[in-house]
Image (cartoon, rainbow, N blue to C red):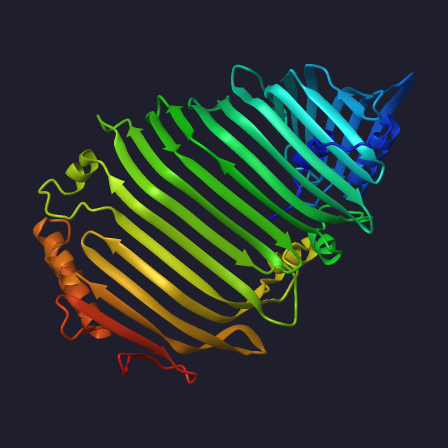
Length: 509
């Protein structure tokens, strides 16, 4: 689900900019920020004081009444100043250490209220706004931008430095944005971070375990654009915002990244893990036409050290990628859906292989997996409508109808065997029972090296002979040998409107 996060949405307004030549005043900038937040459903209050060319704003508070299951969300900042410059631009001056308070007050009395006190730290920061009241550009830069958790309260439990810590440090931050007001608010933004480090530590006072997480990332970038409707009263009603014309798109990239996790547990045993990658990319798009995600990560390495093992369990993956797209609004016509997954070059260390197959009989070539599925689906409710989601949970309503599925490609290549497949199936629906589907179509599958793999697993002691016999019987029911191809099986699964399922022309249902 894509939705404006309260903290990021509020801070993005305070940390955006670029450049233009026309005059803009501190009051223009502050009014635009207020209008922006209020148009998204946030209530913004503050104390304003004008002194010469400076507009001082203190006790800034953002409030959002979200869905019933979240209740009230609030964030507050102590102070900032907007200063008029001689060239017609406005500088936004913030303290090097700026307190920030974040609160969640649930509507359910049985749920705990959460309050987090944090500090935003900055060095070498510079923020300047320019343009006109309806065409604002901003530019923000800082040598260091950090976030520290000072204290967190959950219900009656208080977490301080002894049992809850969070420190995030961003180095060489640059961020720019442009906002244009017309019938809607159009925006564009981009930014970069040379490097990031973070460390977290958490201990439940009622439990002996302590969890510590550390991470780094380099060469992070972001760019995005979109349009926001004016006058939408509730930011949490994403369905209404999308129908009013909201769009958004963004791309995030990063370079080398690492993360380590250490769990110290004197009762159940300690464990540590580390993951690293050479780079990654994530793209997100959303509009009334649907939402889509696509991401990739290269050069991944994972190592795990359970307490019961005297050595690291190490794994590698050359490339991991996924894509997902789906409709978000109820329509009469079926819309496109898609799902893709690609894992290339999965490997395990010799230590892991030695535990699984000490005889060395299994092929240790890198494994690969690829899945590409597309189709058509019809939403029966607005996916982002809070009331519709509640009705679905209470009544068990089916949220969507699947009209067709295309298996464009399936490839599983591992342990010396390779499975491939493709096909297409369409569905007829019973108007009185949305869950009843009548499929029609066919799927073709092909397995190369399957019998050899079973023989190897049996000889290695990894597969009992009786289970191997059962597997071969199943393969014989659904597959036939491919003519002229050694150790190759193929299968054509057909689905008919009258409910029959055929395997290579033989009815199995």
